[in-house]
Image 1 (tube, rainbow, N blue to C red):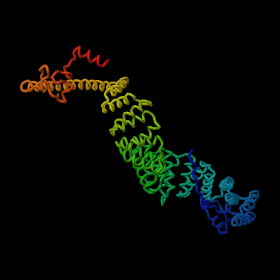
Image 2 (spheres, rainbow, N blue to C red):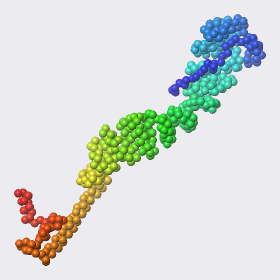
Image 3 (tube, one colour):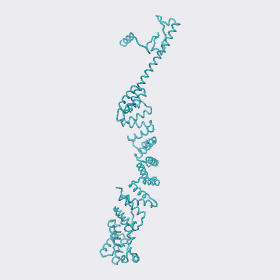
Image 4 (spheres, rainbow, N blue to C red):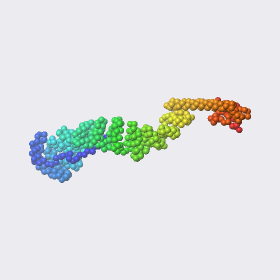
Length: 498
Protein backbone atom coordinates (compact mmCIF):
# COMPACT_ATOMS: atom_id res chain seq x y z
CA UNK A 1 0.00 0.00 0.00
CA UNK A 2 1.19 3.50 -0.73
CA UNK A 3 1.18 6.06 2.03
CA UNK A 4 -2.03 7.93 2.45
CA UNK A 5 -1.95 11.29 0.77
CA UNK A 6 -3.04 14.17 2.97
CA UNK A 7 -5.84 16.08 1.35
CA UNK A 8 -6.11 19.78 2.02
CA UNK A 9 -9.78 20.50 1.58
CA UNK A 10 -10.87 23.92 2.71
CA UNK A 11 -14.41 24.77 3.61
CA UNK A 12 -14.67 26.99 0.59
CA UNK A 13 -14.73 23.91 -1.63
CA UNK A 14 -18.17 23.04 -0.26
CA UNK A 15 -20.34 25.80 -1.67
CA UNK A 16 -23.72 24.81 -0.34
CA UNK A 17 -26.83 26.92 -0.92
CA UNK A 18 -28.35 27.17 2.55
CA UNK A 19 -30.74 30.13 2.49
CA UNK A 20 -34.44 29.84 1.89
CA UNK A 21 -35.45 30.96 -1.61
CA UNK A 22 -36.84 34.48 -1.77
CA UNK A 23 -40.03 35.49 -3.60
CA UNK A 24 -37.89 36.74 -6.48
CA UNK A 25 -36.10 33.41 -6.59
CA UNK A 26 -39.45 31.65 -6.67
CA UNK A 27 -40.53 33.87 -9.55
CA UNK A 28 -37.28 33.15 -11.42
CA UNK A 29 -37.88 29.44 -10.74
CA UNK A 30 -41.20 29.66 -12.56
CA UNK A 31 -39.34 30.82 -15.67
CA UNK A 32 -36.87 27.94 -15.67
CA UNK A 33 -37.17 25.32 -18.38
CA UNK A 34 -38.42 21.83 -17.79
CA UNK A 35 -35.00 20.46 -16.92
CA UNK A 36 -34.97 22.67 -13.86
CA UNK A 37 -38.49 21.80 -12.70
CA UNK A 38 -41.86 23.41 -13.23
CA UNK A 39 -43.18 26.33 -11.21
CA UNK A 40 -45.18 23.94 -9.03
CA UNK A 41 -42.01 21.90 -8.41
CA UNK A 42 -40.15 24.92 -7.02
CA UNK A 43 -42.82 26.36 -4.73
CA UNK A 44 -42.70 26.30 -0.93
CA UNK A 45 -45.65 26.49 1.49
CA UNK A 46 -45.73 28.82 4.46
CA UNK A 47 -45.84 25.83 6.82
CA UNK A 48 -42.44 24.72 5.55
CA UNK A 49 -40.98 28.06 4.50
CA UNK A 50 -41.16 29.68 7.95
CA UNK A 51 -39.23 26.86 9.74
CA UNK A 52 -36.69 26.92 6.91
CA UNK A 53 -36.15 30.63 7.44
CA UNK A 54 -35.71 29.93 11.17
CA UNK A 55 -33.17 27.17 10.37
CA UNK A 56 -31.33 29.62 8.15
CA UNK A 57 -31.00 31.98 11.12
CA UNK A 58 -29.59 29.06 13.14
CA UNK A 59 -26.96 28.54 10.41
CA UNK A 60 -26.03 32.21 10.59
CA UNK A 61 -25.56 31.75 14.32
CA UNK A 62 -23.56 28.54 13.68
CA UNK A 63 -26.04 26.64 15.84
CA UNK A 64 -26.16 23.48 13.78
CA UNK A 65 -28.04 21.40 16.32
CA UNK A 66 -30.80 24.01 16.05
CA UNK A 67 -30.76 23.55 12.27
CA UNK A 68 -31.14 19.78 12.54
CA UNK A 69 -33.87 19.94 15.21
CA UNK A 70 -35.82 22.53 13.22
CA UNK A 71 -35.68 20.78 9.85
CA UNK A 72 -36.05 17.11 10.77
CA UNK A 73 -39.76 17.28 11.80
CA UNK A 74 -40.66 18.91 8.47
CA UNK A 75 -39.82 15.74 6.56
CA UNK A 76 -42.82 13.99 8.09
CA UNK A 77 -45.31 16.74 7.21
CA UNK A 78 -45.85 15.95 3.56
CA UNK A 79 -43.25 18.34 2.15
CA UNK A 80 -43.18 18.50 -1.64
CA UNK A 81 -40.03 17.41 -3.57
CA UNK A 82 -38.64 20.93 -3.78
CA UNK A 83 -39.15 21.48 -0.04
CA UNK A 84 -37.53 18.10 0.69
CA UNK A 85 -34.63 19.08 -1.52
CA UNK A 86 -34.06 22.29 0.43
CA UNK A 87 -34.46 20.53 3.82
CA UNK A 88 -32.03 17.70 3.00
CA UNK A 89 -29.49 20.08 1.56
CA UNK A 90 -29.61 22.45 4.55
CA UNK A 91 -29.49 19.62 7.07
CA UNK A 92 -26.57 18.03 5.17
CA UNK A 93 -24.67 21.30 5.58
CA UNK A 94 -25.38 21.23 9.31
CA UNK A 95 -24.15 17.65 9.59
CA UNK A 96 -21.05 18.59 7.64
CA UNK A 97 -20.26 21.44 10.01
CA UNK A 98 -20.59 19.01 12.91
CA UNK A 99 -18.10 16.67 11.19
CA UNK A 100 -20.83 14.04 10.89
CA UNK A 101 -19.79 13.35 7.33
CA UNK A 102 -21.64 10.09 6.74
CA UNK A 103 -24.92 11.79 7.66
CA UNK A 104 -24.03 14.75 5.45
CA UNK A 105 -23.46 12.37 2.52
CA UNK A 106 -26.76 10.61 3.25
CA UNK A 107 -28.71 13.91 3.19
CA UNK A 108 -27.01 15.21 0.04
CA UNK A 109 -27.82 11.98 -1.78
CA UNK A 110 -31.42 12.23 -0.52
CA UNK A 111 -31.58 15.79 -1.84
CA UNK A 112 -30.60 14.54 -5.28
CA UNK A 113 -33.14 11.72 -5.11
CA UNK A 114 -35.97 14.24 -4.72
CA UNK A 115 -35.51 15.11 -8.40
CA UNK A 116 -36.07 18.79 -7.61
CA UNK A 117 -32.49 19.94 -8.14
CA UNK A 118 -31.59 22.04 -11.16
CA UNK A 119 -28.70 20.92 -13.33
CA UNK A 120 -26.31 23.32 -11.63
CA UNK A 121 -27.52 22.29 -8.17
CA UNK A 122 -27.15 18.62 -9.02
CA UNK A 123 -23.64 19.15 -10.34
CA UNK A 124 -22.65 21.13 -7.25
CA UNK A 125 -24.08 18.52 -4.87
CA UNK A 126 -22.38 15.65 -6.67
CA UNK A 127 -19.09 17.50 -6.45
CA UNK A 128 -19.61 17.97 -2.71
CA UNK A 129 -20.62 14.34 -2.23
CA UNK A 130 -17.56 13.15 -4.15
CA UNK A 131 -15.31 15.27 -1.98
CA UNK A 132 -16.90 13.93 1.20
CA UNK A 133 -16.53 10.35 0.02
CA UNK A 134 -12.82 10.99 -0.54
CA UNK A 135 -12.41 12.61 2.87
CA UNK A 136 -13.99 9.53 4.44
CA UNK A 137 -11.64 7.27 2.41
CA UNK A 138 -14.36 5.89 0.17
CA UNK A 139 -12.27 6.73 -2.85
CA UNK A 140 -13.96 4.80 -5.63
CA UNK A 141 -17.39 6.18 -4.66
CA UNK A 142 -15.90 9.66 -4.54
CA UNK A 143 -14.36 9.21 -7.98
CA UNK A 144 -17.69 8.02 -9.37
CA UNK A 145 -19.56 11.07 -8.04
CA UNK A 146 -16.92 13.55 -9.21
CA UNK A 147 -16.72 12.10 -12.71
CA UNK A 148 -20.52 12.08 -12.97
CA UNK A 149 -20.53 15.74 -11.94
CA UNK A 150 -17.98 16.44 -14.66
CA UNK A 151 -20.10 14.63 -17.22
CA UNK A 152 -23.03 16.82 -16.12
CA UNK A 153 -21.02 19.96 -16.80
CA UNK A 154 -18.94 20.59 -13.69
CA UNK A 155 -15.91 22.76 -14.39
CA UNK A 156 -12.75 20.67 -14.15
CA UNK A 157 -10.82 23.20 -12.08
CA UNK A 158 -7.16 22.67 -11.04
CA UNK A 159 -8.27 21.83 -7.50
CA UNK A 160 -10.83 19.28 -8.72
CA UNK A 161 -8.25 17.75 -11.08
CA UNK A 162 -5.79 17.42 -8.21
CA UNK A 163 -8.49 15.87 -6.02
CA UNK A 164 -9.27 13.24 -8.63
CA UNK A 165 -5.55 12.46 -9.07
CA UNK A 166 -5.25 12.04 -5.31
CA UNK A 167 -8.35 9.85 -5.12
CA UNK A 168 -7.18 7.53 -7.89
CA UNK A 169 -3.80 7.27 -6.17
CA UNK A 170 -5.41 6.40 -2.84
CA UNK A 171 -7.51 3.79 -4.59
CA UNK A 172 -4.32 2.50 -6.25
CA UNK A 173 -5.92 2.90 -9.67
CA UNK A 174 -2.88 4.50 -11.22
CA UNK A 175 -3.43 3.56 -14.83
CA UNK A 176 -6.92 5.12 -14.79
CA UNK A 177 -5.90 8.18 -12.80
CA UNK A 178 -2.78 9.05 -14.80
CA UNK A 179 -4.77 11.37 -17.07
CA UNK A 180 -5.74 13.51 -14.07
CA UNK A 181 -2.19 13.45 -12.68
CA UNK A 182 -0.87 14.68 -16.03
CA UNK A 183 -3.70 17.21 -16.32
CA UNK A 184 -3.12 18.75 -12.89
CA UNK A 185 0.57 19.11 -13.80
CA UNK A 186 0.00 20.55 -17.28
CA UNK A 187 -2.67 23.05 -16.23
CA UNK A 188 -1.09 24.27 -12.99
CA UNK A 189 -0.14 27.95 -13.15
CA UNK A 190 2.09 28.60 -11.40
CA UNK A 191 3.31 25.01 -11.15
CA UNK A 192 3.96 24.08 -7.51
CA UNK A 193 5.94 21.33 -5.82
CA UNK A 194 2.79 19.31 -5.13
CA UNK A 195 2.06 19.22 -8.86
CA UNK A 196 5.45 17.65 -9.54
CA UNK A 197 5.13 15.24 -6.61
CA UNK A 198 1.73 13.97 -7.72
CA UNK A 199 2.82 13.25 -11.28
CA UNK A 200 6.06 11.68 -10.04
CA UNK A 201 4.07 9.35 -7.78
CA UNK A 202 2.15 8.04 -10.79
CA UNK A 203 5.30 7.57 -12.86
CA UNK A 204 6.89 5.65 -10.00
CA UNK A 205 3.90 3.40 -9.43
CA UNK A 206 3.55 2.71 -13.15
CA UNK A 207 7.32 2.08 -13.42
CA UNK A 208 7.73 4.67 -16.16
CA UNK A 209 11.46 5.12 -15.67
CA UNK A 210 12.23 7.59 -18.51
CA UNK A 211 9.34 9.81 -17.39
CA UNK A 212 10.57 9.69 -13.81
CA UNK A 213 14.06 10.69 -14.86
CA UNK A 214 12.79 13.54 -17.01
CA UNK A 215 10.57 14.90 -14.25
CA UNK A 216 13.14 14.57 -11.45
CA UNK A 217 15.72 16.31 -13.62
CA UNK A 218 13.31 19.23 -13.99
CA UNK A 219 12.75 19.24 -10.23
CA UNK A 220 16.50 19.34 -9.54
CA UNK A 221 16.84 22.33 -11.85
CA UNK A 222 13.98 24.13 -10.12
CA UNK A 223 14.88 23.22 -6.52
CA UNK A 224 18.66 22.67 -6.57
CA UNK A 225 18.89 22.91 -2.80
CA UNK A 226 16.39 20.13 -2.10
CA UNK A 227 18.40 17.16 -0.87
CA UNK A 228 15.58 14.63 -1.17
CA UNK A 229 15.15 15.40 -4.87
CA UNK A 230 18.85 14.82 -5.49
CA UNK A 231 18.63 11.58 -3.52
CA UNK A 232 15.76 10.43 -5.71
CA UNK A 233 17.74 11.32 -8.82
CA UNK A 234 20.76 9.33 -7.63
CA UNK A 235 18.61 6.32 -6.76
CA UNK A 236 16.87 6.43 -10.14
CA UNK A 237 20.17 6.64 -12.01
CA UNK A 238 21.53 3.70 -10.05
CA UNK A 239 18.32 1.79 -10.80
CA UNK A 240 18.80 2.39 -14.53
CA UNK A 241 22.49 1.42 -14.35
CA UNK A 242 23.47 4.98 -15.17
CA UNK A 243 26.43 4.82 -12.83
CA UNK A 244 28.22 7.77 -14.40
CA UNK A 245 25.14 9.96 -13.95
CA UNK A 246 24.78 8.83 -10.34
CA UNK A 247 28.47 9.60 -9.79
CA UNK A 248 28.12 13.14 -11.17
CA UNK A 249 25.01 13.74 -9.06
CA UNK A 250 26.81 12.51 -5.94
CA UNK A 251 29.74 14.82 -6.66
CA UNK A 252 27.43 17.84 -6.93
CA UNK A 253 25.64 16.86 -3.73
CA UNK A 254 28.96 16.58 -1.91
CA UNK A 255 30.16 19.95 -3.17
CA UNK A 256 26.89 21.50 -1.99
CA UNK A 257 27.16 19.91 1.46
CA UNK A 258 24.21 17.58 0.97
CA UNK A 259 26.03 14.34 1.77
CA UNK A 260 26.18 13.94 5.54
CA UNK A 261 25.56 10.27 6.30
CA UNK A 262 28.43 7.79 6.49
CA UNK A 263 27.00 5.44 3.87
CA UNK A 264 26.62 8.34 1.41
CA UNK A 265 30.19 9.54 1.92
CA UNK A 266 31.62 6.03 1.59
CA UNK A 267 29.53 5.48 -1.54
CA UNK A 268 30.92 8.69 -3.08
CA UNK A 269 34.50 7.58 -2.38
CA UNK A 270 33.75 4.19 -3.93
CA UNK A 271 32.34 5.93 -7.01
CA UNK A 272 35.66 7.73 -7.45
CA UNK A 273 37.48 4.42 -7.16
CA UNK A 274 35.12 2.73 -9.61
CA UNK A 275 35.61 5.46 -12.20
CA UNK A 276 39.41 5.26 -11.95
CA UNK A 277 39.89 8.23 -9.62
CA UNK A 278 41.04 6.28 -6.56
CA UNK A 279 43.32 9.05 -5.28
CA UNK A 280 40.43 11.51 -5.03
CA UNK A 281 38.22 8.87 -3.41
CA UNK A 282 40.90 8.06 -0.83
CA UNK A 283 41.43 11.76 -0.03
CA UNK A 284 37.70 12.24 0.58
CA UNK A 285 37.37 9.09 2.67
CA UNK A 286 40.42 9.92 4.79
CA UNK A 287 39.22 13.50 5.27
CA UNK A 288 35.79 12.34 6.43
CA UNK A 289 37.37 9.81 8.80
CA UNK A 290 39.50 12.56 10.31
CA UNK A 291 36.39 14.74 10.62
CA UNK A 292 34.57 11.94 12.43
CA UNK A 293 31.76 11.63 9.88
CA UNK A 294 32.99 8.22 8.72
CA UNK A 295 33.94 5.62 11.30
CA UNK A 296 37.26 3.80 11.28
CA UNK A 297 35.56 0.45 10.99
CA UNK A 298 37.34 -2.51 9.48
CA UNK A 299 35.33 -2.26 6.25
CA UNK A 300 35.99 1.46 5.86
CA UNK A 301 39.70 1.08 6.58
CA UNK A 302 39.90 -1.72 4.01
CA UNK A 303 38.18 0.50 1.45
CA UNK A 304 40.61 3.34 2.19
CA UNK A 305 43.65 1.06 1.97
CA UNK A 306 42.45 -0.42 -1.31
CA UNK A 307 42.00 3.04 -2.80
CA UNK A 308 45.52 4.09 -1.78
CA UNK A 309 46.87 0.85 -3.28
CA UNK A 310 44.82 1.38 -6.44
CA UNK A 311 46.31 4.89 -6.68
CA UNK A 312 49.78 3.36 -6.10
CA UNK A 313 50.17 5.51 -3.01
CA UNK A 314 51.70 2.62 -1.07
CA UNK A 315 53.38 4.81 1.50
CA UNK A 316 49.99 6.23 2.49
CA UNK A 317 48.36 2.82 2.31
CA UNK A 318 50.82 1.18 4.70
CA UNK A 319 49.62 2.78 7.99
CA UNK A 320 46.04 1.92 7.10
CA UNK A 321 46.95 -1.62 6.11
CA UNK A 322 48.90 -2.05 9.35
CA UNK A 323 45.83 -1.02 11.34
CA UNK A 324 43.64 -3.44 9.38
CA UNK A 325 46.13 -6.30 9.66
CA UNK A 326 46.31 -6.02 13.44
CA UNK A 327 42.66 -7.00 13.64
CA UNK A 328 42.53 -9.06 10.47
CA UNK A 329 43.53 -12.33 8.85
CA UNK A 330 46.05 -13.65 6.41
CA UNK A 331 44.60 -11.73 3.49
CA UNK A 332 45.15 -8.44 5.31
CA UNK A 333 48.80 -9.31 5.95
CA UNK A 334 49.16 -10.29 2.31
CA UNK A 335 48.00 -6.84 1.22
CA UNK A 336 50.33 -5.25 3.76
CA UNK A 337 53.25 -7.31 2.46
CA UNK A 338 52.53 -6.22 -1.11
CA UNK A 339 52.55 -2.57 -0.01
CA UNK A 340 55.87 -3.06 1.81
CA UNK A 341 57.30 -4.74 -1.27
CA UNK A 342 56.24 -1.86 -3.53
CA UNK A 343 58.01 0.52 -1.15
CA UNK A 344 61.13 -1.72 -1.28
CA UNK A 345 60.84 -2.55 2.41
CA UNK A 346 61.86 -6.12 1.74
CA UNK A 347 62.47 -7.30 5.29
CA UNK A 348 59.06 -5.96 6.37
CA UNK A 349 57.47 -7.54 3.32
CA UNK A 350 59.05 -10.90 4.16
CA UNK A 351 57.71 -10.71 7.72
CA UNK A 352 54.22 -9.75 6.49
CA UNK A 353 54.10 -12.60 3.96
CA UNK A 354 55.18 -15.06 6.65
CA UNK A 355 52.39 -13.75 8.90
CA UNK A 356 49.90 -14.08 6.06
CA UNK A 357 50.77 -17.74 5.61
CA UNK A 358 50.79 -18.39 9.34
CA UNK A 359 47.37 -16.80 9.91
CA UNK A 360 45.76 -18.57 6.99
CA UNK A 361 42.46 -17.72 5.34
CA UNK A 362 44.14 -17.10 1.98
CA UNK A 363 42.24 -18.01 -1.15
CA UNK A 364 45.51 -18.65 -3.04
CA UNK A 365 48.26 -19.47 -0.52
CA UNK A 366 50.56 -20.55 -3.36
CA UNK A 367 50.71 -16.93 -4.54
CA UNK A 368 51.73 -15.81 -1.06
CA UNK A 369 54.48 -18.47 -1.03
CA UNK A 370 55.72 -17.19 -4.38
CA UNK A 371 55.83 -13.60 -3.07
CA UNK A 372 57.71 -14.76 0.01
CA UNK A 373 60.23 -16.56 -2.18
CA UNK A 374 60.63 -13.44 -4.33
CA UNK A 375 61.45 -11.07 -1.45
CA UNK A 376 63.87 -13.62 0.04
CA UNK A 377 65.61 -13.95 -3.32
CA UNK A 378 65.87 -10.18 -3.70
CA UNK A 379 67.52 -10.03 -0.30
CA UNK A 380 70.05 -12.65 -1.43
CA UNK A 381 68.68 -15.42 0.78
CA UNK A 382 68.74 -18.06 -1.92
CA UNK A 383 68.31 -21.17 0.19
CA UNK A 384 65.33 -19.77 2.14
CA UNK A 385 63.90 -18.50 -1.14
CA UNK A 386 64.10 -22.01 -2.58
CA UNK A 387 62.33 -23.32 0.51
CA UNK A 388 59.43 -20.91 -0.13
CA UNK A 389 59.29 -21.78 -3.83
CA UNK A 390 59.21 -25.49 -3.03
CA UNK A 391 56.21 -24.77 -0.83
CA UNK A 392 54.18 -23.26 -3.68
CA UNK A 393 54.87 -26.07 -6.15
CA UNK A 394 52.18 -28.09 -4.37
CA UNK A 395 49.47 -25.80 -5.81
CA UNK A 396 48.46 -26.30 -9.42
CA UNK A 397 47.94 -22.59 -10.10
CA UNK A 398 51.43 -21.61 -8.88
CA UNK A 399 53.41 -24.76 -9.65
CA UNK A 400 54.72 -23.64 -13.00
CA UNK A 401 55.89 -20.26 -11.75
CA UNK A 402 57.52 -21.63 -8.63
CA UNK A 403 59.19 -24.50 -10.47
CA UNK A 404 60.61 -21.94 -12.85
CA UNK A 405 61.99 -19.98 -9.93
CA UNK A 406 63.57 -23.09 -8.43
CA UNK A 407 65.28 -23.94 -11.71
CA UNK A 408 66.44 -20.35 -12.08
CA UNK A 409 67.94 -20.19 -8.58
CA UNK A 410 69.59 -23.61 -8.92
CA UNK A 411 71.14 -22.53 -12.20
CA UNK A 412 72.24 -19.29 -10.62
CA UNK A 413 73.86 -21.15 -7.73
CA UNK A 414 75.57 -23.48 -10.19
CA UNK A 415 76.70 -20.55 -12.32
CA UNK A 416 77.99 -18.78 -9.23
CA UNK A 417 79.99 -21.92 -8.38
CA UNK A 418 81.46 -22.00 -11.85
CA UNK A 419 82.29 -18.31 -11.64
CA UNK A 420 84.07 -18.86 -8.32
CA UNK A 421 85.99 -21.78 -9.80
CA UNK A 422 87.09 -19.68 -12.76
CA UNK A 423 87.99 -16.79 -10.50
CA UNK A 424 89.99 -19.15 -8.24
CA UNK A 425 91.77 -20.66 -11.24
CA UNK A 426 92.66 -17.28 -12.66
CA UNK A 427 93.85 -16.02 -9.27
CA UNK A 428 95.88 -19.19 -8.65
CA UNK A 429 97.53 -19.10 -12.07
CA UNK A 430 98.26 -15.40 -11.79
CA UNK A 431 99.97 -15.98 -8.42
CA UNK A 432 101.84 -18.99 -9.81
CA UNK A 433 103.20 -16.89 -12.67
CA UNK A 434 104.00 -13.94 -10.43
CA UNK A 435 105.80 -16.00 -7.74
CA UNK A 436 107.55 -18.16 -10.37
CA UNK A 437 108.90 -15.06 -12.06
CA UNK A 438 110.18 -13.71 -8.72
CA UNK A 439 111.90 -16.99 -7.82
CA UNK A 440 113.57 -17.14 -11.25
CA UNK A 441 114.82 -13.63 -10.78
CA UNK A 442 116.23 -14.55 -7.34
CA UNK A 443 117.96 -17.57 -8.82
CA UNK A 444 119.68 -15.38 -11.39
CA UNK A 445 120.63 -12.30 -9.39
CA UNK A 446 119.77 -13.01 -5.75
CA UNK A 447 122.26 -13.00 -2.85
CA UNK A 448 122.67 -15.57 -0.07
CA UNK A 449 119.88 -14.01 1.98
CA UNK A 450 117.49 -15.12 -0.72
CA UNK A 451 118.33 -18.82 -0.28
CA UNK A 452 117.75 -21.20 2.60
CA UNK A 453 120.36 -23.62 4.10
CA UNK A 454 119.57 -26.12 1.36
CA UNK A 455 120.09 -23.50 -1.33
CA UNK A 456 116.48 -23.19 -2.29
CA UNK A 457 115.39 -19.74 -3.46
CA UNK A 458 112.68 -18.14 -1.42
CA UNK A 459 110.71 -14.95 -1.34
CA UNK A 460 111.12 -12.49 1.43
CA UNK A 461 107.29 -12.14 1.44
CA UNK A 462 104.44 -13.66 -0.53
CA UNK A 463 102.11 -11.09 -2.11
CA UNK A 464 99.03 -10.71 0.05
CA UNK A 465 96.74 -11.86 -2.73
CA UNK A 466 98.69 -15.11 -3.00
CA UNK A 467 99.27 -16.13 0.63
CA UNK A 468 96.37 -18.60 0.49
CA UNK A 469 97.71 -20.24 -2.63
CA UNK A 470 101.54 -20.41 -2.45
CA UNK A 471 104.30 -20.34 0.19
CA UNK A 472 107.67 -18.50 0.00
CA UNK A 473 109.22 -21.32 -2.03
CA UNK A 474 106.47 -21.21 -4.66
CA UNK A 475 104.93 -24.44 -3.50
CA UNK A 476 101.12 -24.49 -3.89
CA UNK A 477 99.27 -24.71 -0.59
CA UNK A 478 95.76 -23.98 -1.79
CA UNK A 479 93.71 -22.60 -4.62
CA UNK A 480 92.65 -24.15 -7.89
CA UNK A 481 93.98 -27.64 -8.57
CA UNK A 482 95.54 -28.07 -5.19
CA UNK A 483 95.20 -31.53 -3.62
CA UNK A 484 96.80 -32.18 -0.24
CA UNK A 485 98.99 -35.34 -0.06
CA UNK A 486 98.24 -38.09 2.40
CA UNK A 487 101.03 -37.08 4.82
CA UNK A 488 99.78 -33.51 4.97
CA UNK A 489 96.22 -34.65 5.48
CA UNK A 490 97.32 -37.02 8.26
CA UNK A 491 99.38 -34.33 9.96
CA UNK A 492 96.50 -31.86 9.63
CA UNK A 493 94.09 -34.35 11.09
CA UNK A 494 96.44 -35.14 13.96
CA UNK A 495 96.90 -31.44 14.62
CA UNK A 496 93.13 -30.92 14.70
CA UNK A 497 92.70 -33.96 16.99
CA UNK A 498 95.61 -33.15 19.26
